[in-house]
Amino acid sequence: MFNEHPINNDNSKSKVMVYDKNTEQHVDTECHRWHKSYMHTPKFDSTIKKSYMFSGEQRNEIGEELPDIFKPYFEAVKKETDTIFNQVVINWYYKDHDYIPMHSDWTDGLVKDSTIAVLTFNEFVNEDDINLRTFSMVPRDDSIVKGIKLSIPLRHGLLISMCGDCQKTHRHGVDQVNSNSRRISMTFRNYK
Image 1: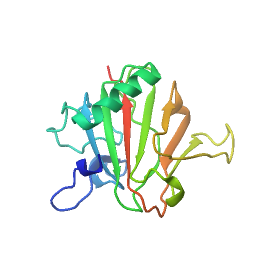
Image 2 (image 1 turned 90 degrees about the horizontal axis):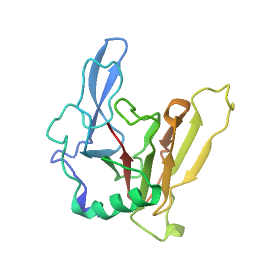
Image 3 (image 1 turned 120 degrees about the vertical axis):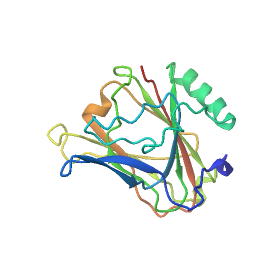
Image 4 (image 1 turned 60 degrees about the horizontal axis):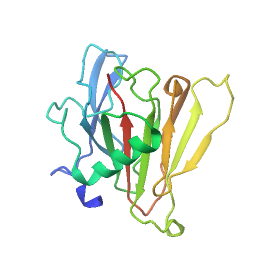
């Protein structure tokens, strides 16, 4: 599975479209991890004044079929969560400092209050030998529960489901950590 890593020829990371409120323009920005979108990925719309996390402005990835090696996991997560998913983003944490800063997921075009699920694969299954990355979640509004941070060690095979209006009420991320293990995550969504 780790041999499927979509390393670019120039070793640059994936790009995301970040909306700069000062210039009112989208900027193609290097991401803190590798990622690639498959299946029903929303097309980039420059008129939407929000950041866009999927594939920069490249159109050739939109609608691309999920690689065969990931299909059994796609089917297993649909069954486990009893949810219909039609889009997958695969994130590759290749180096020890790869991470995702705190954010809420892009929900434009998602089925209302649908589940977003994340499945973790670690390169080394014997987790006593590695420093695990951590999934963290905090309320978007400090007045809800000030200073509370949920931290979950990302063990091999862990499935996290974010349901309902979680993206409106909370932010989440994968902390930067000195890990000696590569990680792959599959994020599952259901778009209209």
